[in-house]
Image (tube, rainbow, N blue to C red):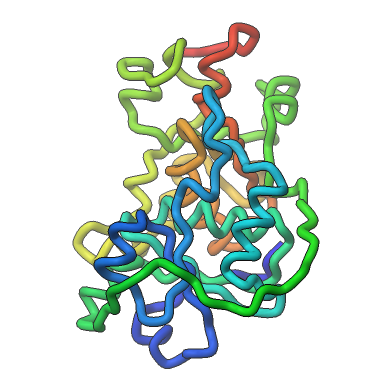
Length: 267
């Protein structure tokens, strides 16, 4: 797992060209605007795409193909970013933790912050030209949470299930699954609360206090989820950047829990 990941500002990134940027956006966005010399990964490459829980981790073969394409280097410091305030960047950071990568940073605010800093973009192909290397990925279980990590521990004071969907989804007024509601006892903190719309979608300044005031603390076992482990990518990454050691992501998320008949639901 990455040792002490940290946010990095656009100006600091520009001064450290040895870092490699991974931009997780649609191909269309990347072709139109990307950070100079950035590597492109599409969101679809980070998920299995298999319904109903389409946001689960891809098979090892698919992950290996993606990391081979970008010329993955286990000794490289990668800077993850996106164009939406950190959801897909966080999913990328989680994936790097899952493969045991040791050094990543978050471009705080992503493309919005880069533009706000007055820095220039490149445009052009998403094609990544790298030397193909042979390597074998080994998946780490620590960042991953499954139903079996949650269900037997419901009601356990040491466990915090962090639901970072919208409040309407949390209380069951809106759902994209067969059942509405939330995991019994889950705490709600919308992922949008973690980003500052007035500061290039950078992380809010009081984020540590924000988590604490919502019952999300370092001494607890934290499991974050949303609908497909996209929005919870930001939740996971924010906790990691704050030094949380006991943070995991339930990659099946509500698209799995809410589409089963054997999982309890609370409204």
